[in-house]
Amino acid sequence: MEQLLQQIEQYRQEIAAIVPDGAEALEAYRIRFLGTKGIVKNLFTEMKNVPADRKKEFGQVLNDFKLLAESRYEGWKSQLTTGDAETASTIDLSLPGDPLPLGTHHPITLVRDRIVHIFGRLGFSVAEGPEIEDDWHNFTALNLPENHPARDMQDTFYIHQHPDWLLRTHTSSVQARVMESQRPPIRIICPGRVYRNETISARAHCFFHQTEGLYIDENVSFADLKQTLYFFVQEMFGKDVKVRFRPSYFPFTEPSAEMDINCRICGGSGCSVCKHTGWVEILGSGMVHPKMLDNFGIDSNKYTGFAFGMGIERICQLKYRINDLRLYSQNDVRFLRQFTGAV
Ligand code: DAH
Image (cartoon, rainbow, N blue to C red; front, side, top):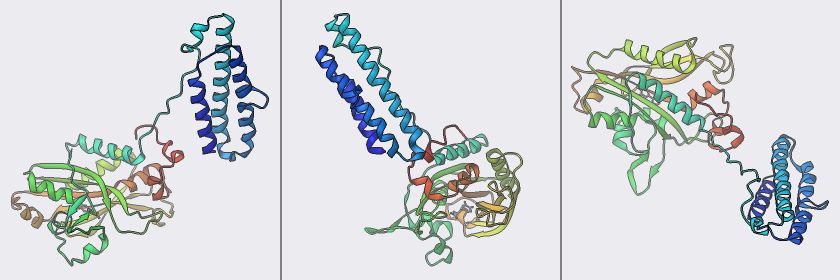
């Protein structure tokens, strides 16, 4: 099928490059493209070898090509009969234009942009950091010193020449960088790609995308955290979304919580995505650990803050009901073409 499409494209180019000549050349053209044993006929006989699910697409391409070949012939012929050999070699304006295939945004991009937009309305601006990080920003500064058991869950890829460098395992490294260089009030969101040393399957990949959020100011409370995140999921999934917070542990927040929403795939009746619980975890969050603030010279007696981190693939999965993580990175246009509009 791909070969046939390529072949048709070549023929199109050949036709486009033709400089119309006398009656003999026109007849040769007719026999080659439109004759009973010509190219167009032959291509139609290939139809039977095209897989059933692509017949429609191929049929369309083929019909367009047939029209092109025919109209080229007609245009050429009428130029010859009006005897205008001069104009015969100029551009034929009666030809249909070549279609320009329009691309689409990747679903991850759509959802990322939507997240940035929602938090943008709450005053969060975008911060970025490097994907190749050092140990300090990815782990140690976040209260995850060497040999801390929480590092186990985030195995990654290390850079041989620089044992201290690694591919960041989360976007939390960006909050470390922001706290290093900015003073409160801080209100940022950090979308980006992260890496983990995991076996690739429908549920895990060696890279994925996260968005981090960080808000530090005077009097920031857990109530602010809850309301901000609740607002976010309502904007993303609709007003009917239900949330629940579960106590959790992250070394860089205290207290910490994970937030679940009611499963958007099965509506709560139980499926493999929510592991038959009706709830799906979408993010980790908590109040920034005072030690983190002190690590970066921010007065923890004066300032408090909250932080959160979410996987964009997961949000996208629930938004678009995507059941296999691998689809995101296989570049299959049949998958990608489904996401045409903004979320
Ligand atoms: N970095 C965590 C992870 O990748 C997610 C996370 C949890 C980010 C809590 C946070 C947070 O900022 O407060 O699993």
